[in-house]
Amino acid sequence: MMSHLRNRALCAAGAIALTALSSAPIVFAVRIGERALVTDIAADDSTVEHGRYLVKITGCNDCHTPGYTASAGRVAESQWLVGDRIGWHGPWGTTYPPNLRLLVRDITAQQWLEVARRPMRPPMPWFALRDMSDEDLLAIYHFVRSLGPEGVPAPAHLPPGEPPQTPVVRVPRG
Ligand code: HEC
Image (cartoon, rainbow, N blue to C red):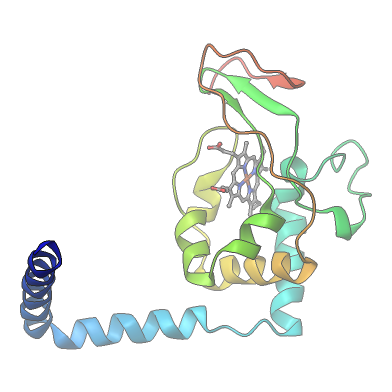
């Protein structure tokens, strides 16, 4: 009975989707085509090299790689982007730069484009990722994946008022 009802609901949803589609078939096809093309970027040497360059010059390691800033960038690439246990504490609570090596292992290129463009808490310069081209974002994705998974997940975000149990950088304003 329940599954019968569910099937009917699915049919209705399908019919609505088809009706919507038939009114704009061309736009839909073009959108799908573009997206498929962009996320199909091959993880070849030049894409990975471009991703390595972008990660290096756009500062991702400054926060996501322990010791990178203190050593002026002298951290072996095998240890890059594993996330950090040093928190950033401010009016938003406490945030920790997540482990990007584990993140990219678990998501598709398409999901990466969505995750990377979401608004995030300080001090993540999320608007830089929002404004990056798909090609650049995907080059970063393929580079980080080429490094392989490493490290452990960073601590979870703490809401304002919850005292951090790790060392933190204190930021007066967001
Ligand atoms: C100033 C420090 C800082 C810099 C620089 C920085 N990040 Fe972050 N990043 C963070 C913090 C802190 C978070 C967690 C934000 C939150 O909890 O909302 C984060 C979150 C993220 C996330 C979200 C991960 C998830 O699981 O949702 C991605 C993706 C990311 N950063 C990628 C990058 C990339 C790529 C760069 C380089 C272009 C970069 N970050 C530069 C501090 C930084």
